[in-house]
Image (cartoon, rainbow over all chains, first blue to last red; front, top):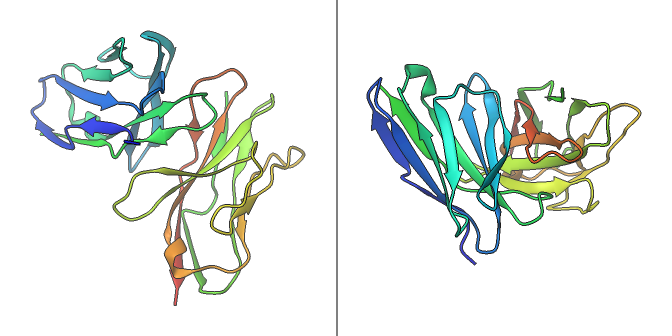
Length: 111
Length: 109
């Protein structure tokens, strides 16, 4: 079966712009989580959605937001981009919260 | 708050030698522990979770609640084991993973 699909794979944006990243989970998985991966901070949890509801949110500013659609696909949005937002953004889906399957990520570069 | 510590950023061993990647955690409740692996140019993959007590690719990990550790072990390292390894914790009732900083394992021929 298809894995977790993230689009786009690479993105270059300018400071101050906003960006939307997309994640399609494994079919049947209703939980979608987002993580930010940077060399300095490692993997940090952004938020998790289940059946279109945000259940958990990490310690990130309000510029980071997300949503989940009825087909479980999820998007995350970052507004007013800063240089420090440059990172690999990973999406993970789960059927039961015991095991998470990760996508390949979207590499965002802010210039 | 939960914390996961992987004390070694880099670990290098020879092929055929035993491997142990250390993971310590800080959490007052009953944690769920995972090991994830990231091979070069590949996505993060689940290697082990303590609930299932499986052995994957020869790796095992035992949860030691007394020492708050979940070390990953393999008796005989293979070159294809070279990768980045992350230990992760999920707190009771939580829907997020807390990751360690990772250990880059290099297996020398």
